[in-house]
Image (cartoon, rainbow, N blue to C red; front, side, top):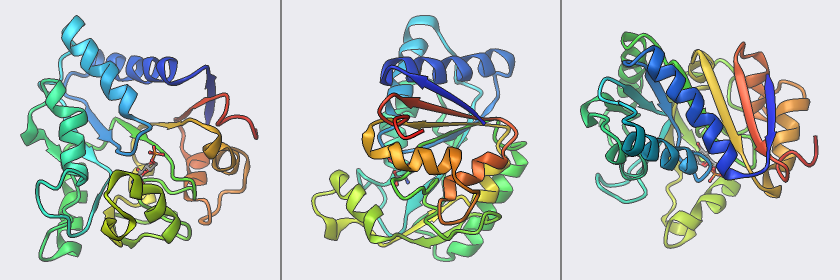
Length: 241
Ligand code: GLP
């Protein structure tokens, strides 16, 4: 695990975008793993800029989202499908047909989770997975206690995560209780993972995930087992290391 402490969002976004740009120059049809939450947003902005300014080409890229709320109507502005479209794929030349996410509206969610895992495998696996981390250590929506070997499945959000995410909704009561998320075992199969955490509210979880034991109570600690994990943090998030 490589931990890089930077001065803020801009250098973090630049470093993550450099890794994605280098990958796309080497492999134009790379498979990207996309995350939501606020942490990856500056990376998407930087990639959109490089697309505009330098012609960074996403036309052959395939992409898989990490997670999705269960039951949000199609087109709800906070569905992760909509967020990823708005914040990233619409701003570059990434074909919407090449962007896949877990389906929170499927009639048979377990079957759709298996199909999603098959689609990742058929694409050759994820080359580079962007990640944020919840204040409780969740990756995607793998809440504390998630099996370190888990695959894409339904999870129930803990109250802290619903409260953390209420800022994106009108009120806490509008935040769904259930989600579909790639499992920790799924995430571990990405060839390179880049996790971004900023701000003092992430200091404890950064310490737990970098220096704590590998334990399901902090799902993100599983990245200690990953052969190529890059953790990008600002000074506030690194302050308890
Ligand atoms: C949500 C997402 C996670 C994300 C987390 C942190 O719960 N499901 O993938 O890492 O939020 O969000 P933020 O980056 O806004 O702190």
